[in-house]
Each structure stands twice: as structure tokens, then as C-alpha cells.
Image (cartoon, rainbow, N blue to C red; front, side, top):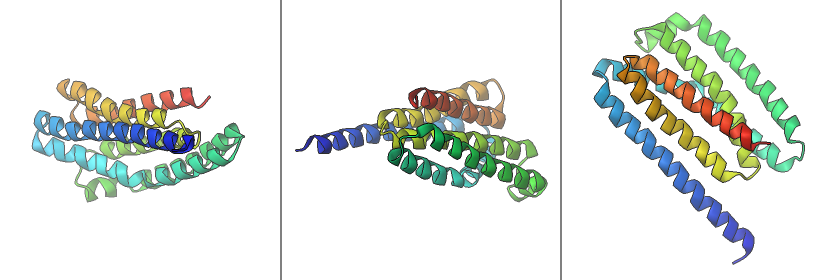
Length: 194
């Protein structure tokens, strides 16, 4: 086997194991939160997480563009600056639209508080920054660090949620846990982007 094929297989296996570990954390999160929260609060929390998933669709595009241009370009800082501008524009547009439609979205998703929607927006904005770091790590072929970012988000969500829900924060605890987990992953990713 050629060295590049062996390296590719090794990186693929490492990334697979790390991603599966993150999935286990996400699965445990659902089980633990289902047991710690009342049914209505658990449903509200899952609605917020689902709303984040919908609002975060642009992050996939940012990740793919970042990975491609970082892999093809030696001027990494220029690409990152460009992606930050792009992500900022998307974040600004999302924020304006969400804030204009805040009450309607709250009613549409039958949420108890419009602050849940604002929390989902905050997580989405943080996810936009995360997508730049994850795309950059992929483009730089730092697959282990990329996989570790996924674990940090999932494990952070699980661990911080348990603590915050037990403290009585309920849905706000999950929102805060997602922000903390993603924030830690961003800091970790930025460290390896140097």
C-alpha cells in the first residue's frame, strides 16, 4: 500500500471513531435529559435544538467553502478573514429576520418563551463561527482536531446540561450548555489553526 493510502485510511478511521464517540454523547444527552426534565420542558428543549438545526443550515456551506479554499490556498489568514465576513453577513441577516419574526416563531413552535428563540439564534451565530474553524481544520487536514471539536460540542452539551438542569435552569441550561460546548470547540479549533 502506498503511504498516502495508509495515511488516508488512518485518518478516516480516527475521524470515524471520534464522530461515533460524539454521536454516543448526543444519544446519551437525549436519554439523560429525558429523565431529568419534565415531558413539557424536554419537548421545549428539543424544539429549540431542532430550531438551531434549521437556522444552522448555512453553516454547512461555510464549512465546505472554508475546507475547499483552505486546502487549495496558502494564504489561510485571507481565507479566514473572507469567511468571517461572509459568516457575519449571514448572522446579521438571520438576526434581523428572527428578531422581526420573534413573536410569530414563538407561537408557531408553541414555545413558552420568546427567549428560547433568542437562545436558538445565539447558538446559531456561535455555530457560524464554529463552521469556519471546522472547515479550516478539514482544509488543513487536521482531522483528529476536527473530530475532537465534534466531541467537545457533544460532550460539553451533555456535561454542562446535566449540571445546569440539575441547578434548575431547564431549557436555558441546555441553551447555555450548547453555547459553552461550541465555544470551547471554537477556542480549541483556533489554537490548531495557527
